[in-house]
Image (cartoon, rainbow, N blue to C red):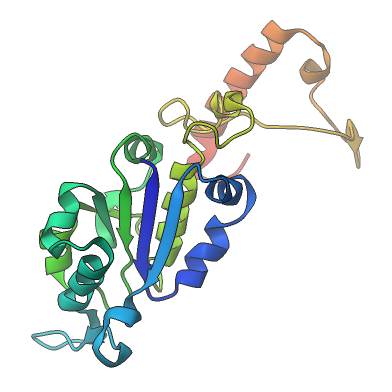
Length: 228
């Protein structure tokens, strides 16, 4: 994967999160291509949604607007975009975004993200234009821009040459399936009566490695409560 395009209502929300830090530098250096598009630029009178058939609250993003955006950007019929790119819709009912999925996307074809908004997206965007849908979890956001930013950041940092030290990816959270990383400490060695664990100051790399493995397992068990 060497190219990411995001179609949404608020491109600045995604740009602001993606164009910073190591990920932003990777884009600036040309390690990955990144573009964002405002769906309103492809809509009649700038309106991308309409009332849902069958009634109900909220407005629904129109399939014809999304299709027009894809066709104008890629120059092919909207249904054909997914033949050469991974086209992901942000949708609460979609696949849960986790590290395994991030690895899958990073090693796959170029990525297109379509962000949901308002009361949802016409189902035909999912069934006819997208390869899949993805969700951050079992909760509702105002729009998919946050999901798109999270996916872009997670994927780009996995690409070769993005991190200054590739070893940073080894042993971090979820580098082993389902396991979070161990605690990290730095100076000062003692703060307000709380000292850094002595093993980390011992210089014994075997003991440090064993301690980190134990702590990682303990932190993984503690995830259900968020308490330590």
